[in-house]
Length: 404
Ligand code: GLA
Image 1 (cartoon, helix red, strand yellow):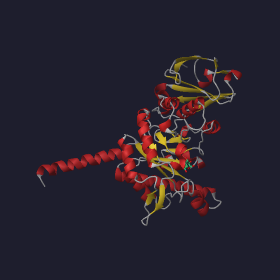
Image 2: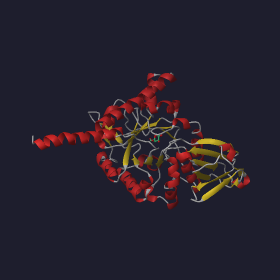
Image 3: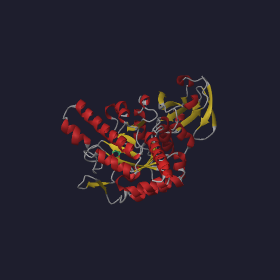
């Protein structure tokens, strides 16, 4: 070997190694993951073309710049396994590696979906008995995120191996998630590509208590969302009390966003988005990006609201108090700042239920100045002043310097 090469090569190898190690060690999900997922709008119709289209739109609409980075393929990409157990993609997804390369070429990341049972929720092939093989394949394709959905693991394994024994069933479930968590870690060690691990088992068995230890970066806390106010409200209410389990690298996941879907009113879209931000929830849009209305884009790209969600302190907001049909939630932010959300969860305009914000009940002095994050204007809150809110609308205020 040429003597100069003999000197340069090890240096080069060292540089590659340290770059790979740095990548492998760079922690993921230090703030709640943001992106888009195919399920809420496309469900089982999603194709390679839709995923490319979503990536294009994230860039074109400014959503990428606002922080939406993950483009996640949900269920229905899978076909059968070949003779070597390698899972094949179906005709809707002719070439996953090429698709991942395309999404990466836009400066975005890409996610995929599977589950610990024989079948996914949509009845497609899942990972039981092939966990390492599948994790390795996702990493080789270039995937950055895995949503792992319990579904048929319940009848396939839990009910079969431990009928009528809830404690044993829970152990089996935890072991299944642990197995995939480890498989992803091993795949990352080989490829240097960190993979966000999203647990989807609908918030059973206090998942928030055990998911972080086995590598979970987020875990669903409830059953599925749908684009109706009642469901969004029910899910948001169920998050109260879970705040202590969230933090950098590990988040409660009240399910993907329905902003822009169904017949939600603008107030409902605004409140849904704001509430998820207060909850430090992952912000995974699930709407039809190519046909997004300007008002929906304005909601999804509201930088001030996103900054609440992505606040580096990573402290999930909490329910402070309710008064009639009005709820007050607060979230502590970096640098001593505070976000206050006042939400009319009732079906009437508030003139029929005058609401008076009691600042003392949220530990504040009688006058506060901050920013109304939906009007962008400076606002002064005075103790017990009446606040008018249309049904299902929100007043979201950021106080950079709360006064006690
Ligand atoms: C479950 C999940 C949904 C979605 C579907 C796909 O219902 O909770 O988010 O992934 O499966 O089949």
